[in-house]
Length: 125
Image 1 (cartoon, rainbow, N blue to C red):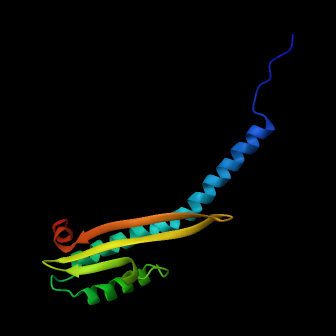
Image 2 (image 1 turned 30 degrees about the horizontal axis):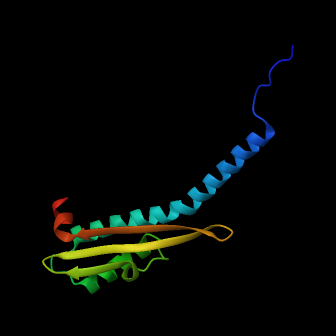
Image 3 (image 1 turned 135 degrees about the vertical axis):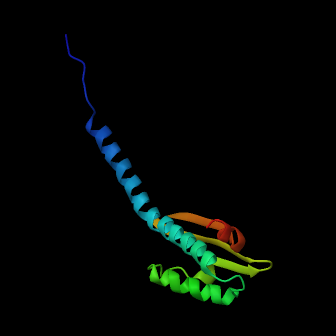
């Protein structure tokens, strides 16, 4: 009687390694964009809390650009990714997308969108 074969074949192991490598490559490409977005969200929230109620949108943009520069986010300009309006309070609408090359002619596209307002930011203190 023959014993039945046990274990994985070389092709199965190679296939697993290739899938793992693709997953790691995707994570390495995606992680910095999500981290930068988290930093941008945090800085917007902090500036909305700290800023006076009558801050102008242009002053808000200049202070945000300084904060992003201090946090080493140099590939995003705040005026390009956000719209700031002032009605009863300051409202910041952030919307942008990041494209990262993945393999050959395949790119990963990440879209980030969120709205902040000063009243709710100050209430969250």
